[in-house]
Image (cartoon, rainbow, N blue to C red):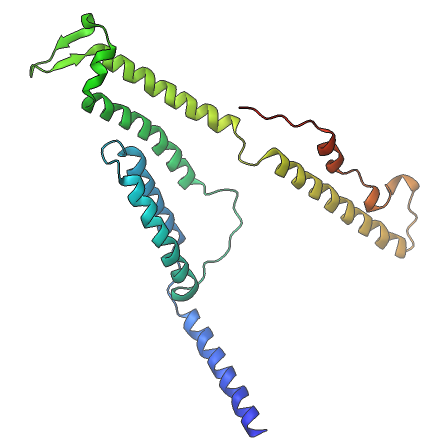
Length: 226
């Protein structure tokens, strides 16, 4: 009994010490982690034309960063407070802006560093610059057109490809419908136990007979767009 009591007190002391140590840990800075990701994303997107190995370097860095951040989050810092939010708010907007800036920046780098573009413009659009280098006005117009096409394509994909797939959205609606029916059925049962008179119209049948979206999904024809 003495040994069991000693082991019990030792376990309680170890647990208390562990809780005290975790309580005194440095808080995990979520904003700092988001800022690092956005800065890295900006360098890769905006200057990928100048440094073509930036994407590979960022990929290797993120592989190691994943394990390091996991260890820091679980063992080296206090766990952040969970907050329910709809999205990542300003960080997502920053990434969208950087995406547009990256298109413009890479088109500009292509204009300044790609001599082969001169072959695609007529000769009458070429004029001489002050430093005697050939400057193709047609090249500039070509790059402006490419930039507008890429930005328009990005906006088109952003608004046509849903963030949540249609099948997942239908499953969410189905689950919400069933949950609402369950709450309503529970309320009717509680009212019945209290002796409240319930009209037949207020009861819509058992949950198994509640209209499900599964049948609609089965009846729908699948289409694949290439």
